[in-house]
Length: 188
Image (cartoon, rainbow, N blue to C red; front, top):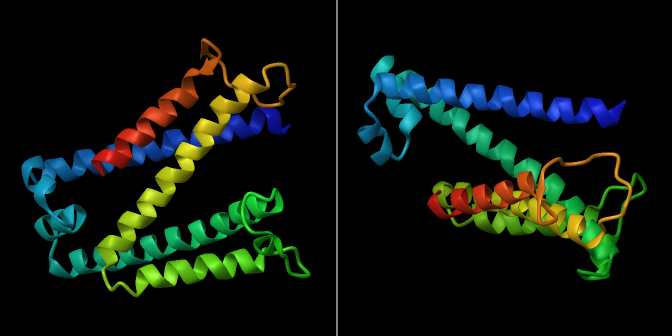
């Protein structure tokens, strides 16, 4: 029953992730003062260097590179499908709506991979990570803004998934999502 299991799964995933983030933050600030963490370019590597040794800090840096790579791959996969959907609805050039025999939006994937390669060729991994974060924030902002727009423009539509709590027809959760995303984007 997706109408009950999907919301529960999403809330469980958000809860577990929040718990992990809070635990890491508490451990990090217990090992290194927050003032030092705030000015560090690699705060978790600093924690590992302080708590253990240089080798573990280097290992953590390698893990961070793979995590960034994983995020980029995720963005390429989802971005290609978003690009395909927009091209299919004629919001982008129609050529980006071409799919392979298996239904993969290959041209949109190729175009986004080219754009990602251009960022990688800049040679600055910090810049690539910032662009990746900005893209994730952009997707979160777009989803929350779309929820608000659709809830206001199509009020009578029957929906299997609902968001409780609205003020003047605006879902509170989506409004908080927009505000939070903008705050993170500005202060990141």
